[in-house]
Amino acid sequence: MLRKIIRRPKYLRSGELAYVLPHSYVKERHELLLTVSLVTNRYLFGLVYSGLCPQYFRSMGEVSGVFVSLVVPTDELNLGISKPGDIDILVIPYQDNALILDQILAIEVKVVRASFFNQGRSPNSMGMTQADGLLKMGFPYVAVAHLIVSDESPEHAWRPMGIAEILDEFGNCRMLPEMNVDWMPIDLMERAMGKMKSARSSKNLGLAAAFLASREEDLNGAGLRGTWYPNVEPASVNDFVQRSTLEKIVSLFHENPTAFMDIPRYDP
Image 1 (cartoon, rainbow, N blue to C red):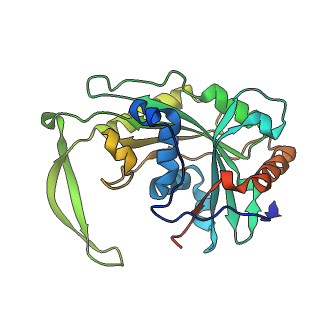
Image 2 (tube, rainbow, N blue to C red; image 1 turned 60 degrees about the vertical axis):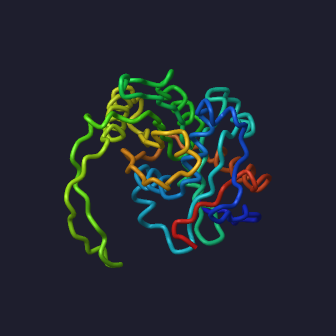
């Protein structure tokens, strides 16, 4: 299903202002701050999206990408459904000058605030009930994402990791001597994924565990210290896609395109 793009959001280049949030959100690592940190780190978001929708991602053309909006109130879609109250991340793919409606993705976000001494932390809610609500609303694809922040492990707990140096544009590389690295981000993502798998209520739900930062300053410069590859399981198409829901999303997009961020498939 395609719909012509009538008005599209301005593409924001690196360093341009994207979102404005209260300073208190930074101090408390608010869920919205972490969600913003995910989508504004376009590389990390691309890794998550490619894992949730791998077949479509691999087929995306040269002039393609996704429009992303955060915390979209469900009552704006006039579907008569109150749970979940918000769509944490709404993803609308596009190709050239058309929206790809049958590939729309809705993501329920939960935050895991872990520490070295409490690595088993879980969010207050696993997000499955809210995700089930998104499936009932008729989104083609639905996923739950756990965004993880933590402190760092003491160096005595670090473990060896292989390091490779990229030699050229063809991807040739050579191995360098191993280095001791803090593996806690990997351990936390694996633990979060295991808990989500156990709690998953529908086979259609995609799952993602993404590590964002060990220190507060990393959230302000996402990607500057490297990116941990997220742990992701693909979403499968909803058995009960609602055409009326897709049409209302199109109306929402054209009424307020500035509420969406343009994340191209390829760097323009």
